[in-house]
Image (tube, rainbow, N blue to C red):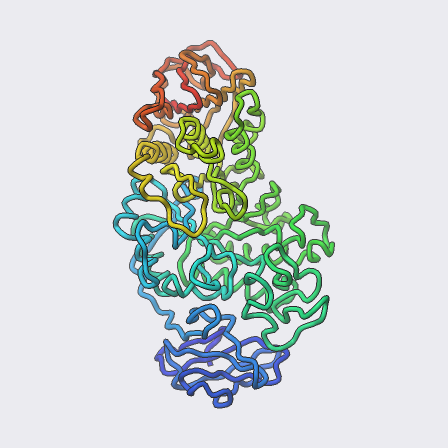
Length: 603
């Protein structure tokens, strides 16, 4: 009998071991098209501790199956690696795959993340068997490679109800969504992505299971449940007030039950080991560590589940660090707590990085503010300099994500938020690209959301990106491309943008100009000075500090009219820094600044 859980195909393919956790069942059998769906032909034996198993000869890859609990309750396997659909049957899967492309993900300080949705990113309609293929089509690969991103963050691919979803309503967390093509297609996608130089990260959802209680296959899985204010969910869920989440009445997993903790831990490791993913993003961890998503986490307090969710996240992250320490885990906690990325030994949750609310929210507020006088330069300084636990790589910085631009969340894409109804206006283009410059020059791991680079203003939903904007706003795409290449030091003259050091040395509260220094080790080709103008005013000659004497060359000017014909093409000239200190810097020089523009200089 093979070790493990679920339907475990034997190496010779002639039999399958079935193993399931059902502690309150009085009997368990497995039915499938290998036994004409008999509810009695193949009983599973009790192993003790709530586990049942049997070896079934003749159960082959591709066969469908279900467990039969207590002779009457037919259940989909919680560990099924594939299902016919979310309310259908489990499928026995041959997990063997000949990986073709060994891959090493980029160091975290060189990552440029592109968040994408499997169904809405492709530029052409796709069928279920071609969706993952289309993501890595020649056209899309060339598009992403020219853009310069090197890390793809995929919205959840675990099986969900129906065929159209963002994936944040997981029905079967071990199964790849059937309408996406299933597990083999996902492995092929990861392999092709690696062949083309892209790391692949996956969003996983453990804060709740399913869209709501009784719609989920785990609901009262083996027949047992308690009464609270009505029927509760059984062995996989909390069975009292702690089960309630913003996504359903009673669908929070029981993070304090050992077998549920193992279920979640095994799932996270499966994605990294079996699918060779390069990292995971954990959705809304604040609802794993706390019942109501608050920031109150007193040890042992009932509101934070007695620390059960907290310790589960520590365990999962420690396991990943122990077995695959080069793979990145990121938290969507959004509370700004440095202990999210502290090690478990120091009492933290041991994530490698987290989405940084201290960047996205103040930056978006500044960019959408209509009057220049209303822009708070101090909050922008903090957004640039914030370093959780002293490390910029412990935060993901962005101005758009699937949450920030979704109409269902009452949100808009940034260009539309800047000038509602006129997202292709000069103001929208100028200020949204100024935000992009902040993302790619700030201290942190930069991320953009699909379509941002072509001025997409349609809110994220179920429709495909408007790829017509690629031709219409090709210059904006080139602006993002140029920023990303500088961020990655493609030309060996902006290494400081990959460095850990940042110093905002000027925040002009009256003139709305900010300047900061980025560096790794310092010196020519390393030191970078970034100057940003958050006003509609043009500055033909603006004095700023520099870290070194000598000639400084303009590597990027977002006001170049090659990016958009209505940009002013303000002359932003190379300059020579002299020995007269300014703004706490040892040297100074003059630069030209267009309205709502950024320039990048290096030696």
